Length: 421
Image 1 (spheres, rainbow, N blue to C red):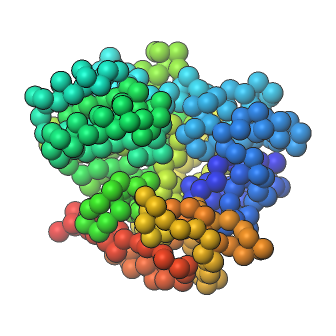
Image 2 (image 1 turned 45 degrees about the vertical axis):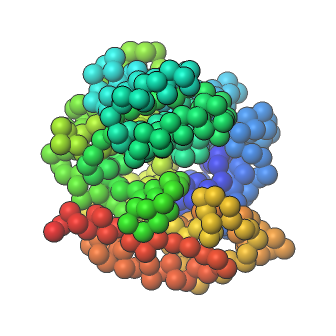
């Protein structure tokens, strides 16, 4: 089979490494891919948001199956366009991808169908939002409606912080059109859990749970990022909670999307908070999370391509989805200064052992040499029998990945270990 994977980050590298295990795969094209992905796939310099370019390439190269991994092309209708020329895809059509593309849509969906989430109000007028904040409970959460590279959520600890977030989004345009509408919602407390789930629009088969680390600094301090590391499984997500989530959140969400005429097929990501009042949805994503994918897929024992095809073909009920009972930890190495200003172009070196365990996100090839080109540069993952061992091994392997001004958190997984005490 000739496969095409849309995207160019660490998530896509993890997907490609997993897809390569299927003996039927002849070639994988990555659009656009990156310098590290080039070792595992044929990179093609077409942007993930160049839908016309993607469609033309797929047609010209007789692609058998496409995996549309990032949020932007999904929301833009990449799957719809590829389906129109007869190419089956992993990923939802645009009318289902709206579950991530619009936080207002997602919140209204949960309210309409009784899916547990934080209390909220939506605004398309800055003055009204600022007036609401005069008496809103603090802390509060301010969210841009549209896609914002995972950075459109501000947890405001003071009333002034919340007002600044509103002004920045609605008047300052820091997230462009994505911030023209906002959600202001109740601040929830409890352990956070990420659950990615395969679905064919009827059946839901969750993947192993994980815990992301969004803040740039140790002990969850500093600015939000796209994710500085992950562990799986999440020890706070017990079998009893998993069953509760299946009955109260996962299946009702898929049923709600069907009822709205927006059948979702692909990977549906549930960002959950385990509150004192039970599990609640913080957010939905319409695709694999990053860097959650880098710990979830290494634990997948079933064949990824087979499972993906089942979500497309509606045969997930008859398809085995098995995960290892081991533990995984991923440590992200970023460029110093991320998530704000950072320098690029530093050479990257990796030991052979580290390279096998590393997914490349922000790097490109210059004169056949791998150099940094993004904020998050690499993610190094280890799998072990215990979480303590996985964390220790991930940091050991991480030391085999070197570039100037590299930065990583030193406490990935420590919050998860507290669950065992």
